[in-house]
Image (tube, helix red, strand yellow):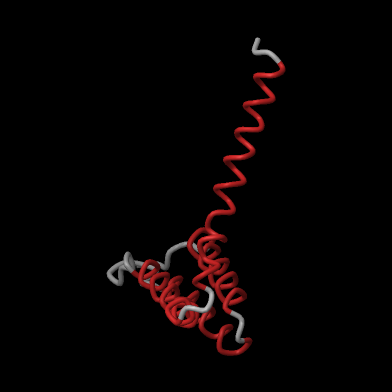
Length: 112
């Protein structure tokens, strides 16, 4: 079994590396806070991320067999509707995701 000093040194080393790895991004971003590029990304990235999520959701939709894309369309409608109504993207994403999972897993396919 390793000695107490060895274990203490390993613990201090691991803690120091963990602290450094978690603080470096904040230290690196400090000079960029006033940057126009970061401001632009802060404004436009949420919409870009939503587009990526929509494309990911709709990439495997098939209209040739039941349920004909209804879970995807319904959850997308709920997500957009909640965002427009409440102006809360997180609420829309959570509700749309929950509805999609419910429809895909709990609702049987329509009769063909």
